[in-house]
Length: 469
Ligand code: HEC
Ligand code: HEC
Ligand code: HEC
Image 1 (cartoon, protein in one colour):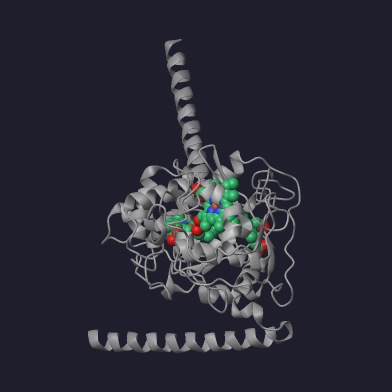
Image 2: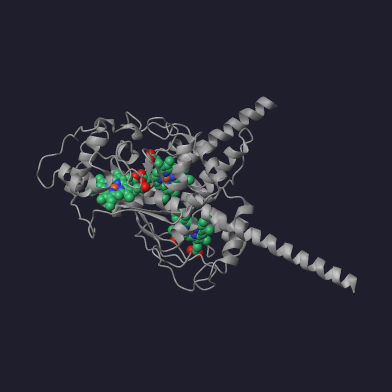
């Protein structure tokens, strides 16, 4: 009887420890999915079912719709084995063999360890609710609808090596590298893209246009990047999306903070900070002073803002007093509690490119951290405050830049360009009919470059072999 009892207890204990180990894996997978921000793209905005797809990533080539990645057997990834899942996440190849577009950041996720892919898979299969509904399909124009062309692209630009810690660096730095380069895929926004939409490695984190918003230079450059920020400021920015008298997170950064960064453990934030400190400095064209350092011009009490104060209703000064001053203060000083940020000593106002100032006015700001919702109204079509024309946005932005920033003139053309989706890579601006020829030309060129490189590597190897013989 006693033996039976003991046996039962042992079995029960074994079973619960099995269960808790499986639970641990699910919990780890959940945390990883937050760090990798899978929901940002795979969940439709405003109450979409978790991971059921329906969010469009706007690319210069057209909208790319994120898939349903719930474990639905009919419309999701319910039939994916762990190997299928790993191939999709790290190599950008679907179960049916079709290639994914790099709007899915598999070039970053390629760094994920087998262990982490396993935990992610376990979480998706065991804990995510299946949704049997079709997500919208992507339909890019010819020739971009030929998914097989991505195989060539991958050959050139996908580094399949999973993350290998650098033994010359400490554990914190390595954790940071893994988070920044892999899970958090910071470079997918902050690194400029080249002709073929690839990230330009030599310019890592030097800034990239996302269309309307611009992901600024976050290299360690003291003037062009974030070299002048303290560790504490950087950690607070990532965790909360705002540092009074320095910067706020709008656009895609607000989404990254809301869905991912604000939910990371403090040690992981510290690791990201440690890694970002070591990113080589890249200078920012046109920056003569750190973006946060502008704005002392009108700090003296009683001093009046300068230009743009003529009385016409579309003058920058009149627009600023009527539309902005109620929240940001007549002198751009913001509110005392910091809820409404100061526009003096504000990177968005002081960056060499005015793009994010224009995007903030045209699109507003929307971020949620720890239950607190931060909202700035937008001033475009449908604004509940007042829709502004391109010329009016330019005029109020010029007023803001003149008084609180680097003092350049913003033109209506710059606003129109931002509203139309910003800079496009060369590839998208070539007339449609010429595209196949251009692509083939570029691929041939790249293939040649690769051949030459390989030949050189062979030569070096031979030399080396000879030397060591
Ligand atoms: C920046 C946006 C973005 C993020 C973040 C993202 N994905 Fe995706 N994902 C996409 C897009 C877009 C597609 C569809 C691409 C296409 O149709 O070529 C996709 C496709 C997939 C597919 C292929 C499914 C199928 O059969 O069509 C899987 C699996 C997947 N993602 C898993 C994940 C996981 C897991 C994460 C987090 C670790 C993640 N994704 C994060 C954008 C994203
Ligand atoms: C989805 C695109 C996206 C991703 C992913 C992203 N960022 Fe950003 N980031 C932006 C944008 C856009 C801004 C500008 C926000 C603003 O000014 O309101 C920004 C701003 C910043 C700033 C402030 C720069 C300044 O001068 O004000 C820092 C620092 C930063 N990001 C770091 C990171 C790090 C570290 C990661 C990865 C953990 C990351 N970002 C991931 C888009 C992104
Ligand atoms: C109803 C109050 C309100 C009004 C009106 C308003 N703002 Fe804002 N503004 C905010 C809030 C709230 C934020 C976000 C603060 C944060 O991110 O923590 C913000 C952020 C900003 C930012 C920083 C955006 C970023 O992402 O870095 C700029 C620049 C800005 N506002 C300029 C303006 C200008 C110019 C106007 C007038 C055309 C204006 N605001 C009108 C409340 C307002």
